[in-house]
Image (tube, rainbow, N blue to C red; front, side, top):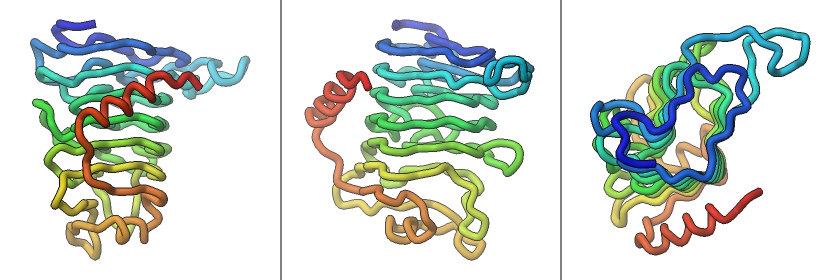
Length: 241
């Protein structure tokens, strides 16, 4: 799918869940606006259904799955998968995403694993979206809980700051579950995880970040050449488990 005025695929309110978006190649989207991305979702309207347990209505729904897609976040697209406005109950995996990272805005209960993000800091979008992971306005009891980012690979082109986690404060950590990721940064730069320490914004090293129980098993290395990244994508997209 290509040459689209807005998102190529929009999941409106995710009714009942159990949707699957897979094996697509999407590029040249969001050509007439300046928001959303190749794939867009929101959950503004809750539904009372028995999706999870027959005969027992609740606001919970089945997971939906986004996997094995190749997404180019070009033109004025902001995120490859724009989980906007309360999006919840998604599992995103084995997607090759170029020029953008993960997004959570006022949502919860999303898992990203075995994703490859290529040059996530290089795009035309705003909103501080040029990171491996963007977690906007998390608030206990309202949004941001049960967000998981594990076993992902993210390559930064010019930045060495992988995350934009709003309200990050080591005195009261409320951040996504981060484990066993691979982060690649430009040569001759030092990775920095931004979070408040003793009330002031600080640039933490990986060891310091780990000391708070975050990103255990995660590695930070120098970014490889583009041919290596393409080979990673080919190998990942051939996996079907």
